[in-house]
Amino acid sequence: MSRRSWILLLTLSALWGSSYLFIKLALEDDVSPAVIVSVRTALAALVLLPLAAHRDALGGLRANVAPILLLAVVQMGGPLLLIAAGEEHVSSSLTGILVATAPIFTFLLAFAQEGQERASGLSLGGVAIGVGGVALLLGLDSGGGGAALAGGLMIVAASFGYGIGGWVVKRQVRDVQPVAMVGATAAVAALLTAPAALLSLPPHMPDFNAGASLIVLGVLCTGAAFVIFYSLVSSDGPARASLVGYIAPGFSVVYGVTLLSESFTVTTAAGLVAITGGSWLAAEGRWPWQPRSAVRGGELPAGGGDLPASGDADGGADVALVEGGAKRGDRVAA
Image (cartoon, rainbow, N blue to C red; front, side, top):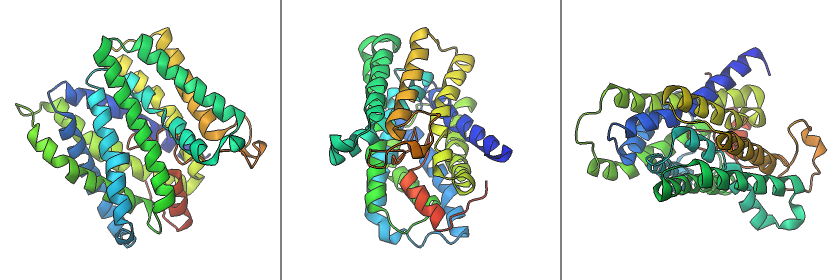
């Protein structure tokens, strides 16, 4: 990777890792999860759709109306609502770590369809390690009793939604460029969550921190972040761009500890390593220092997971989608 690519990767990781900080700031000023998600996705759509139109990339949307509607629920609106609702009860740093479980669910979905004979031992071990990390964090590090446990489970459920979304993209989305697809999905998610947002408006005008957090979430952490992501895909390929999902949780922890005075314990560190490490093994089926060619072709997923480590609005787009976009000449300048 070039120096430019490393700068873009770290910038993207910093942006996606900061999402949970800004969600927490908005929640602390009585902004509801529905308002956060509706405003965030609307602003993201306002960034991405004009860019897609400028690049004449909207043509494939009509043929993908059904997948867009489904993805707006299972891969954007639903998971973002679950994350924001869960973060009402757990720390922003813990949220960032738990979201990184998405590749584990992607692997389990693949495993359910392909069967044990194609699963690599390392991938299965990664699932066990990642699940152990989730249990460790929810059992010992979440704090707050039953409410915190429920909040953590909401975030894990959001990651499951990202896994389902990856399968929808791989099997149903055809002939559309990624920027247009994500922009349209964000627009639909904004519309779907608007009624709940209107019914849960805060009792007062959001203060500066909350208002600025909503703008940054939509414009930078979602809209601009996807532009950077696709620039990385174009220059370095989906596999290297997806590394953001393993770096962003570290930024989430740093932001939470330094800016929100959240605790960082030995258990937090162990959970972070277990989840990100387990997610890598589940998604890649190899050790980080092994080349992809070292994994047998018949094993699942052998580096072919549908999602980066965080295949969401906070951690990356679907690899199946961005690979197709790159092949069709989707070049987005950051």
